[in-house]
Amino acid sequence: MEQLQHIKHVFFDLDHTLWDFETNSQTTLHEMFDKFDLPELLNVSFEKFLKKYKQINDLLWADYRENKVTKNELRVQRFYKTLLAFDYSSPLLAEQMADYYVNHSPYKTALFPGAVEVLEYLNKKYDLHIISNGFREVQHIKLKNSKIVGFFKEIVLSEDVGVNKPNPEIFHYLLNKVKALPSETVMIGDNIEADIKGAAAVGIPQILFNPKQIRHNFKPTFEITHLSELKSLL
Image 1 (cartoon, rainbow, N blue to C red):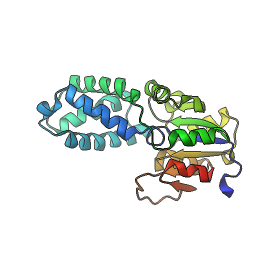
Image 2 (cartoon, rainbow, N blue to C red):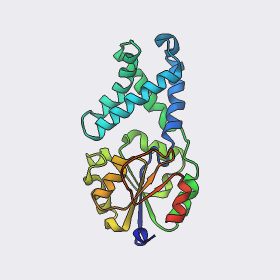
Image 3 (cartoon, rainbow, N blue to C red):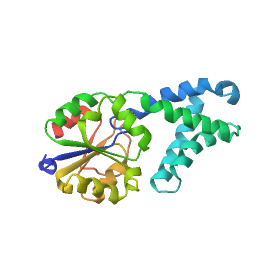
């Protein structure tokens, strides 16, 4: 692959790319749903609760990337607004749910199929790094407990840099840290806005991980639906 022939460094997103956020999050939310007696409190099924939570969480994460909400607002408001959607208002319960989620979710260890195998393969050829918008106190736990932390030379989180992907500054920060040119790196991630457009804006080739084959209008350098495809690209 001509666009990738000079690659020395591979930048990975973590959530939804290596760490199976959806599976791990859903498991934690189900535990929380029962722990706080939400079926009785809200008179709602877990499926309806989960659907509404995901909608609200996605919107708040989009706002967080654009610095429209703070980390703590995101952490609590996603639960407060979900409760509110089912006509239940309790800032205290929302705070308790937020604490439970952050304290339990990162200890879940589901990875995407082929993640460890492809990391072992790439680690022999390139320097691997993490670049993530996730919260500092949970991302390191995820990496450690899922036993993949040892694959990565640098772990750069948006909180450490002060800006979120897709801001060019976070990509330049990691490029400078590893002393690499954009043409010597490749960004692998699932999010069109944060990972793919963010990397493209600073001249880094991109590989979109799109396991659900979600339709979009952007043309990344490459697009894959399974992590094992990276072995034929890199």
